[in-house]
Amino acid sequence: MNDWILPALLSPLIFAVVTLIDKRVLTEFRIPLTSFNLFVGASQGAIGTVVLLTAPGEALEAVTVLSALGIGVTQGVGLAFMFWMLQREDPSRVIPAMQTSPIFVALLAWPIFGENLSALQWLAVVLAVIGGTLASVETSSGNRGFSFRPVYLVLVISALLMAGSQLLTKSITDELATHQIVGFRGIGLFVVMWTLFARRSAVEGLVSFLRRPRQAWWLVLAEGAMPFAGHLLITTAIGRGPVGPVAAVFGSRPMFVFVLSYIGTRLAPKYIFEKLTGRDLATKLASAALVVTAIALVSVA
Image (cartoon, rainbow, N blue to C red; front, top):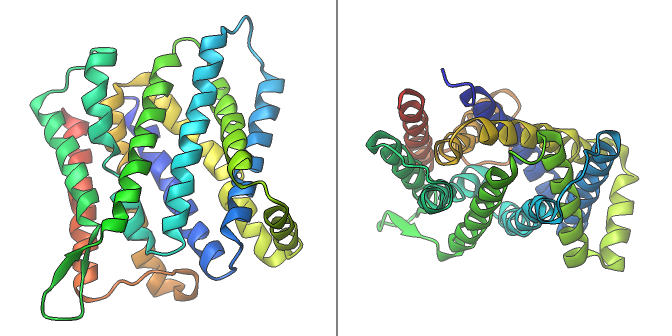
């Protein structure tokens, strides 16, 4: 097995857990979305600063540092869109709909990095994208069967931004160590989140929420160390392997969201805010199956 596949799989597993916890925090605990975004930026910025102070590196070029910060900036805008949708929709619809990013990565990796994908790898990318698109198809209660919700186009924009961040990551893996990339990414994320959402009401809402320890620890868990670990893993995978196939494997996140949601609805339903019934279940299962197939193809290509 290629040495980049394991970290590329562990990262979306971590982020799947993060997604389900985020959904609970936003839906059940009802933290204001702006306050939630402020915490995401503050936590990742603080961790990134500590990491860089511990191992700062030497003679870093300004262009490299700006590129690393740009990873956090592009992800910050993309995450803001994603959280907005996550507050309104099922996680197993939101996450797969974002998985159009591998097609953007694959298309741009060739002219930028000279990465030529084989026919099998292209098939894997296309299957991953189809799986993500399928998640935006919603079953209806009437006789018409299925309908497409245009609001999911917001997640395509988010996916494009995430693809851009992965390409930026690939461009500087030879200049910066993995922990440095993730550290600067955290600072960039802090900058964009606090620029967009730092208002007095948002800060007060965050402080008020953090004073409720039984609820606050879920937020600290999901948006503290777990995302940092997930980004360390995906950055490691991008540094070791071709960014196009890595992006396709990272697309396994919806599969993990679906599997964990399905298990959770049976073992601990009060913690899962997901509808898994009837044709919705079949659609989500088909979406996850396509992504799994894509991962298998990338693994043997």
